[in-house]
Image 1: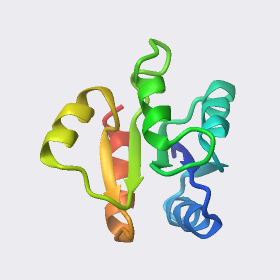
Image 2 (image 1 turned 120 degrees about the vertical axis):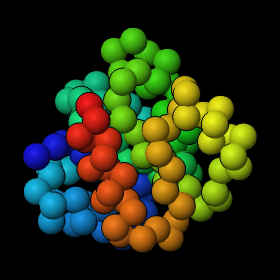
Image 3 (image 1 turned 60 degrees about the vertical axis):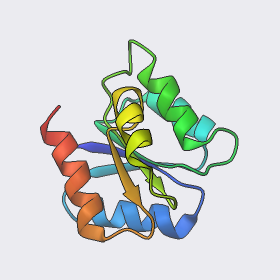
Image 4 (image 1 turned 45 degrees about the vertical axis):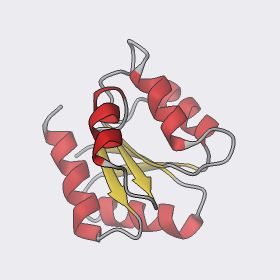
Amino acid sequence: MAHILAVDDEPEIVKLVARLLEARGHRVSIARDGQAALDAVAAERPDVMVIDSALPKLDGLTVTLRLKSSPETKDLPIVLMTVVPPTVEEADRELGIGPDEYVVKPFLHEVLVQNVERLVTTR
């Protein structure tokens, strides 16, 4: 199946994301902060990245914007996990240059899996 990079500094969340996606046959790599996420993408580009918005070193939105502004990684599908739902204006503006999807924490497991798998199949 697909290679997914899960990025979160909360061990329980990243384990949950990995367990959900591995159960669907995906290979999951883990990073614990924004800089580690950038390093992981540079070392082995995933098919989709699931990243938390609140991370140490570099926040998830900053990582997303850096990746989306680079010609090498602009097409990398990204799901941004956040505790604060984006406004319609933020989502409209950022979905052009930011994350491809948002998942609001606490999230329904099915919603996360469906968003990731939809992005895998549209690549």
